Length: 341
Length: 118
Image 1 (tube, rainbow over the protein chains, first blue to last red):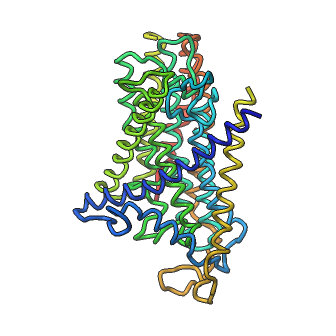
Image 2: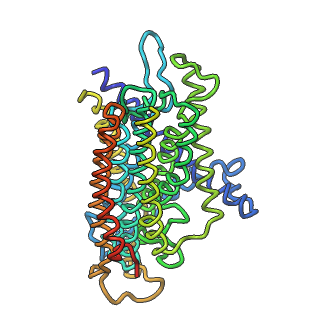
Image 3: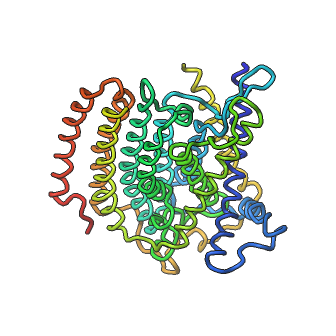
């Protein structure tokens, strides 16, 4: 019973935090893009435009609900939910702060601490592809169908180098321990020697490109290219249903950044963090928050600077460059683990 | 062990509930006055003349097939990656053989032009 209540509280907290994070990520992105373009960005709703996301949400909720005649109605209505639910639950296994002891009980700052956390994240995020594909297909519109097909091939292609690199990271958890692990809690706690940090950072650019493509972000936003597909898979969606797709994309960005921060930059670890105490948990969360913000800045920076790639370039780059590169990385990591670990 | 996954189930139920509310709520709150033009597919001002549900290029199937093949191979890396610290050289050679076979297939499809996109 106790575990039930704790899980409900944690789940509600996670969803509220992710949705607030989404709302203010749109603000963060619009403000930053405006700075890159030398404009002001949203500044009317509230001080410095800080209430803009709330205004957007209210607008989306009160918009007219249009379900076109030509769509496959059940799938059309289900697709936004299929996109959003995986995005919301994928974050559950990422530890956001060190566990702390309060009033004699230990509080762990993740919804679930499972031993196959990494596999869980990979599995759940690929389910998100269904929402996009089914949304594009059920709309029965030429543009959205094309967008859906593109999404399908793009997301599954880039899953390959990502999966291989994740296997290499799992390999590296063998070093300095008896056995490797898939648990994100243990990956954060692992003491890596300095050369291992450097070696892992070598994989970071490739991993980052993969995450960019997986979350359909510019320069890989081919599923929704405005100028050729108008808005790709989400063209027939309006109001809150469009907002749900939007939410899914941005929450994927947050989850991806949190995952990268956890795997490559030590998660909540940082100076002044004393695990087990309340201030340790607070500062630990602060460190993870700063790391996530920095990575999100990188996402937006890339969007502001890099032009969109062509579709054949996108697939060639993945299959002929990133995949062999990540296989080579995996092999070298395996040799390092066997002979140095 | 199984109890570890209970929070995930609860989170899933709450997330699904949120999504359901978000989809149902605007039908109650928003205005409703449909007309013929609103119900048509968007074609940037053109009048749509055919259904979108028809045949599409075969390359997409190719990518999907290649993905299924290679992604299943990648899944085999995970259990191996967890225990390599114990298997040492034996595990390394075993995986070298596996990876060798995989790479033969990879270069075969490359030479066959499966990665080309026309």
